[in-house]
Length: 167
Image 1 (spheres, one colour):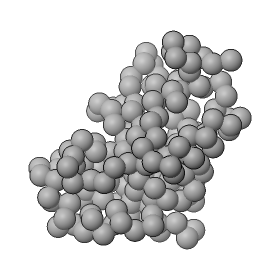
Image 2 (cartoon, rainbow, N blue to C red; image 1 turned 90 degrees about the horizontal axis):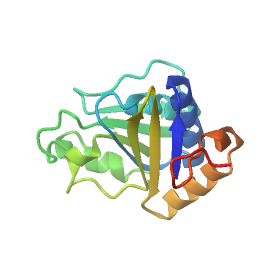
Image 3 (cartoon, rainbow, N blue to C red; image 1 turned 30 degrees about the vertical axis):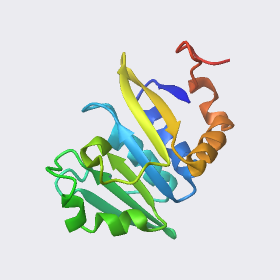
């Protein structure tokens, strides 16, 4: 699935749709260069789970936990991770094993240590907006894509294989 997200407002709105489609659990890998909108997308996911406060990237702490309306969300940012084994010291293996929603920025930094994602979201700069490519990595990920595909809010944002807005 590929979408065009014209501005920050749409990135957050898409994150909210994604948060609803995830239904409070799963592992989501967010990939993209600096400034691609990974934390902005996470803000929308957290809003869908009931968070109303600010969302900052846990670049130095590596993980920020949220306990929201019966849903546990762990927001990881692995940008400054020196070695994937550092995740062991913060209890990362236990957090990732929980029935929780784990959103992981810069997952390539944890390669070889992180479990496979249910869903991978690759964000790319596209003019003044972004393009998001979503790839399912599990049955749960495929179910998330199916739920997103029928959300009316996303209808005008979906792209066809040529990168044009799907009709």
